[in-house]
Length: 77
Image (cartoon, rainbow, N blue to C red; front, side, top):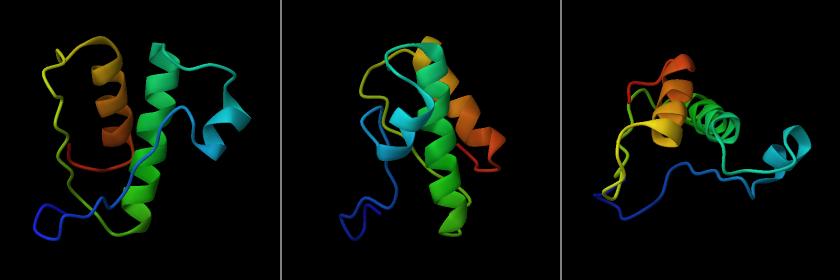
């Protein structure tokens, strides 16, 4: 929430649930899993739309896999 200066949801390949499903990160499958985890957290909090600052990263590869997985959870990305 930019107005409050708070992060509402987050996930990474270091998250507890991630390690239970995958051994390593840094690939398309890992990015998709992180995206799914973010989508699930957002949906659980009633968030319907999120914004992601790509910080200059191209919208392809892992960034695209993450975004697609978030969208599959019903969140507008």
